[in-house]
Image 1 (cartoon, rainbow, N blue to C red):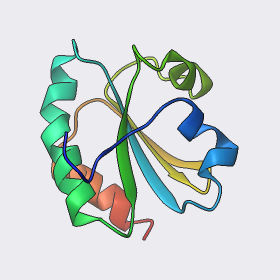
Image 2: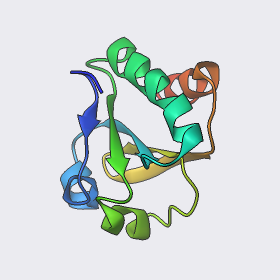
Image 3: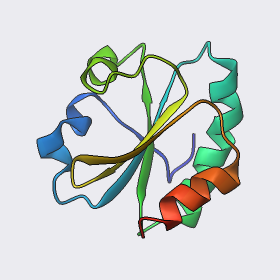
Length: 108
């Protein structure tokens, strides 16, 4: 990971914790998941590109199972975009950078 990507815990993703945080993109992943490894460098690029506009990070579903239960994440990678704790959009499966850029830009 890099300095721009946050490693979220389940506690970080409680609705109360996300209030007032603006746009937050969370990549739900696991180390054994091949498609997650394809998405990882894209998440790192986006975290740098959107620095100061969108908080971008990852949540390891094995280490932090509570958040995956809270948000019913059954397949990974799953990207969830929050605004102040509300879910704006969910994207399931590995996607290219253009799809994620389009999602982020549509809410900025």
